Image 1: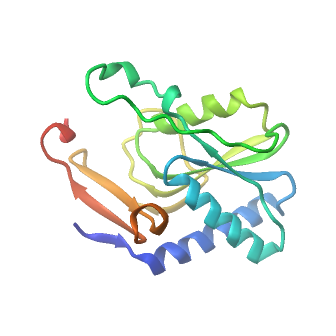
Image 2: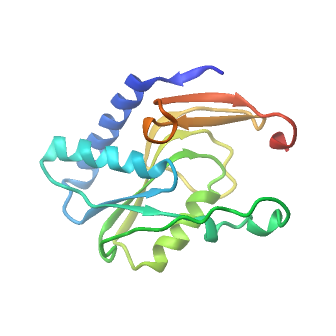
Length: 183
């Protein structure tokens, strides 16, 4: 399992993305971060800290659970039931710039589900997308605004973003899929 990003590189990447967010938006007024569960939430919190360090402004952070918005729930009716967690957006998204945060962009279906759910909460001014890794293989016309690393992969590989908050360490690795995972 090759490590393609270690903790130091991830930290530098988040700092770079935070600077890009400030530059693109000319400040942080009306900006909010919303992380897609699971790993998008701690990444969004880390970005909020970086944004505060850069600008001195606090940015609200929310969490989105897209489980019930996924388009593949009925494709696997047998097996373990999906774990539904809470969505927590403690602010109005109306007329805000929402920065949606996720760990890996692959087919685009997770982002589509997140957009569907976000729109149920209101009408943002705009939605921007941050991902740590863009691995290609899009099935939907979705493109990230801020990318930590473009990492071309094959369909027989997966990309794992590990975070200290959820996995005990910070790293990005490429794994070979085996058996049913590769289908």
